[in-house]
Image (cartoon, rainbow, N blue to C red; front, side, top):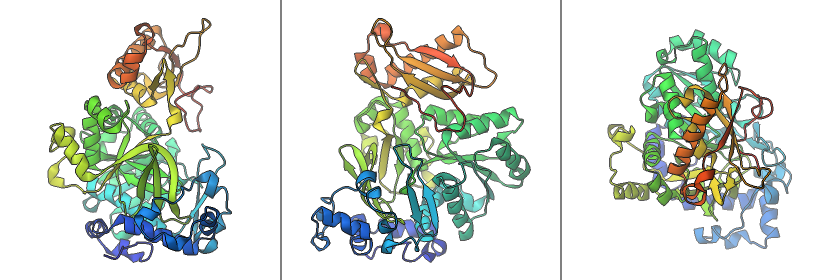
Length: 498
């Protein structure tokens, strides 16, 4: 079957239903699509032609998927930073791209990522999955409030543009763009949300939680607005999801929330679905099953993806992606630690653990599911702290801070360290941000320390077996909200220090 590319026929997105588009794409061979993209890039992208020549590769010799997966990986140093931006674009110039995003530069120099309208339509399909399958937006007037930072950074403008595409397709969506200004978000909610059947907040998870907490303190009754939440940019726990759902008056986390796996270079690579959320909630309740499947003592982000849009491979436990864009990605090493699980493989694994319909984890089989494969990711490996030979992950600590009682004191932000004391011994140091107006005291610090210790022992087998009992309780330091040394405003938070 011919591969149906939205890039070749932009009106396909607007004219065809989500059901038809996904069924059509699932009937195609994603390996054929990846090979076709390679052949196009080898003929039309000057930088990639030079890259192949430098590695002694003749494009006409790459004829099968087996040939394709032997091609050298591209990455930022060897490709994106090695060739001028126009040469990395289709046709060797920027004329075919009408919009630009910039990466955050967290791993080095900021990088510009051009794209065109038709590249966004492929990504808008991911938003359509979330808004139709989970939020039932086709049947409900919806206010979408973009809480990502606006500007050249990819989150805000890209999200806004994709939502406009959904509105143009006929969904009853109105988009508001206050960005990451809480006062403007509150003004939008107060004046506009009462006129819609539901309201969707889209943003970075810690900021969305700050908005929910700050809005409640400012008198906003979130449960009156049938709030849905879309996240991107950070791994969070299922305890955290349950917490924010409770604060917006939701008892349906599988259908009221969704996280996107997105990057500046690749757009949205995958998205949570009601099915993937229910499965993740199963794994949260069964750490042994999670360790068996994922191989680590932390819960990864788990999303479903369209292999025709983004073709994933694994390289030494990290993710490699191929996909069309203004700068096409050919076996591009995004370096996130993670893995791939087929749809049938995941269902078989769950059945082996005695789980069939997932209803106890919030999934409603009557709503249906998409037989798409899964990709899971842990994020960058350098965000761990090594303590007595155990790798301690921020995700483990987060669960300890999200227990009843403790969540009333803390914002959710923390810094984890393992410094050496004056005697040359290691200690596990946890610096925690308090909520506005909460005062620090020894009783709170002790409760937090014990909660984190309990969850580390439950979730992290390395910690439980490697760390001496006398060294298992972290030393907790409580700092006020917005502390400039550990929790400065306006910058992306880092949860570990070395």
